Length: 176
Image (cartoon, rainbow, N blue to C red; front, side, top):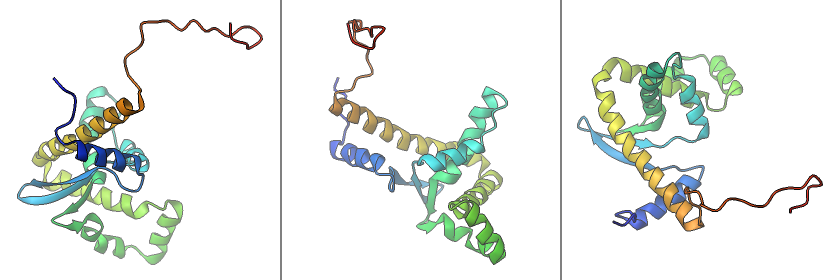
């Protein structure tokens, strides 16, 4: 059985997107009769998500991981940016408050919107989180396939070689 993905061209595009820090792997899914655009997280978004994961136990960590991941990873619903859904809430802040938030963190508006979306999903779609998560997992699978293909093309292997490394440093730093 071949490990070649069903669509090699899509795989190549995914590798390129995953390596490009300004654009990650994304897709539009039809969920609850609406179009949801989700994009995998970049490093700073992953850090934000982890700040919302409850780590008091393994079970709480697992169960609290999905909601913030989706809240920061959902980019649009029905073609409307998450920013647009919460623009009025953002604009209700005083100009000084907005400026203070942005001066502390350039991603403050993104996090503000993600927190509002997280609250919305928790209040309005608690039963739908599992379905949203299933679609999120499709994006994760694409990233894993892209990484595996990238490793394969670069000659990397996760398998360990059977031959031990016989090169040892000497006390002077020279190889024996």
